[in-house]
Amino acid sequence: MTLLIAALLAVQNAPPIVSPEAHEDRRVTFRLRAPKAQEVKVAGPELRGPLGGPSKAMEKDEKGLWSVTVGPVEPGIYDYAFEVDGLRITDPSSPHVFGNRRGSRGFLEVPGPKGSPRHDEWRDVPHGTVTAHWYASAVAGGARRRVHVYAPPGYAKEKDRKYPVLYLLHGSGDDDSHWTLLGRAHVIADNLIADGKAAPMLIVMTDGHVSVPPKEGEEAEARRARAAGAFERDLLDHVVPLVESEYRANAARDARAIVGLSMGGGQSLGAGLRNVDRFAWVGGFSASTRGWEKGVPGMTADAAKVNADLRLLWIAIGKEDFLLEQNRTFDAWLKEAGIKHTYRETEGLHAWGVWRRYLAEFLPLLFKPKD
Image 1 (tube, rainbow, N blue to C red):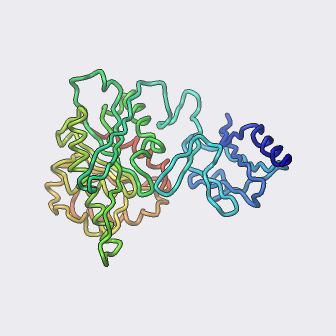
Image 2 (cartoon, rainbow, N blue to C red; image 1 turned 45 degrees about the vertical axis):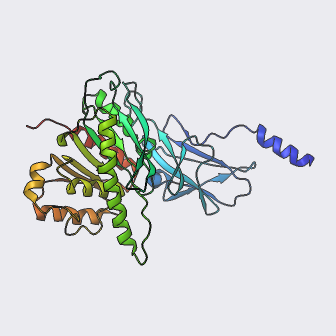
Image 3 (spheres, rainbow, N blue to C red; image 1 turned 90 degrees about the vertical axis):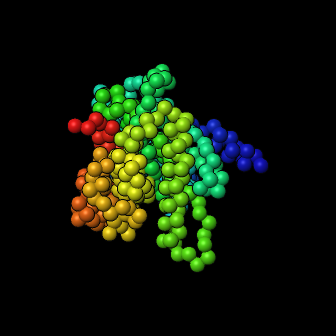
């Protein structure tokens, strides 16, 4: 018992572990106390360059503290995790850990040089607010659902002003909170608005998952299609009316935009192109467009109307993204159908660093007056 108490006291009195630790030279040190572990690695998809591969082995000292220093790392925000004897865990010493639909995830941040902050880095500029807004959805059987709503700087003071709205959708593993937690949408918007590069706007970050009960004998693809339809009805029947009744939103079609990433990119392109009478600005980041070789299901095949109604159709994807061929196929269909659009392939994986960059490019394109 005495030895046990002594061991507990030793753990309690041990200095706190700092992990991750970003140094001034942009090297990063990761640490984990796991005295009984046989092998510990740190892994991060966007850190693969400085990590020398998909994962980097850590070394253990005589006290059971594992550590490794990598870099220098380019300024940015990076997902990472530890692999402990084959078990993947988030960093227990990091304050930047939160849940998602598949468990938990964490990140580290490497600041930009002094005087040259990143586009997604907190700056001393006027800031907007983000509100978590709950509502009951008849589409979801009366279930309670949530959106996060960004209001730009000055919103509370300018009582007579109405604002355009961007509906911003997340990917399959996340929820409506992740465009602020990892996407830094509010920070990117604050910085662009402060620099006069983007119009002040409301940004509505929805929950893209609407549960639909399975039907006997139903195939997975059919169920996914029903879930996508349920999300679109929830968006149009509940979210848009909620925003336009509870916030000072400009309800004109030219004042509505929609964009998303991955699963949300497919949702935004589908909902936007099926409803050009409601959305004038449509985009997709690394969008899931599986099965769209002949166009968006349910979309009116009238290129002239789509071109007349849409102010912007913007699609971008990384050259190392696993959805690249889907996007190339969809781009080819849009060209064949005669639908005007911008299609971009950039460097990058299927990762948040790419999507934050796309958002910073997309926001300045929105809500411009017609020539």
